[in-house]
Amino acid sequence: MSEFSKGLSYAKLKEDGKLTQEQLAEILSCSRKKVQNLLCFAKVDKSIWDAVANMSKVSARSAETILSLSKKSPAHKEALIEIAEEIRKGAGCARIEKLVDEVLNGSFSTNETEVISSPSGQTIAAWKKGSLVFSKNIKIDKLKFNKMLVEFFKI
Image: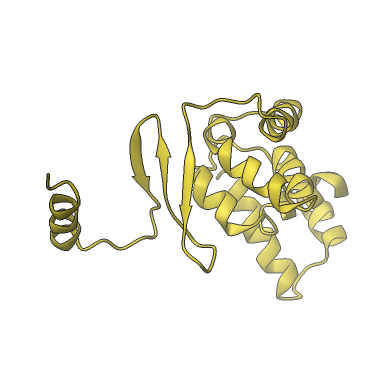
């Protein structure tokens, strides 16, 4: 079970009032800080996790860093979305902080990753390395979409 799955499960137990953070730490035989980091997974904005898509290599400590950075400003949140591929690959805390700083200072390049969001903030897709990658939770009528593409590219 990934740390992401564990974090969401523990957050649900805590939210339901079944266990406190202290009780979780005792049951799991780990520090309160480790439990606190695991609980961060549930607090990170969904748009960030949608961009990352696969959290199997994201550590609880990285989740805590992501949460902390995302709370600093909307620009920090967008920077985290921009570096989603690096997070998916398992970037650690120091690397995440460095990459976010590079994005904010204009020196980060990922072959032009650009996230496409709905007016409500839901991530629809992202341009990555010249390809359009749709979010997993988006339902697409392929026939209608294909017709729209053909119409768009008519010369």
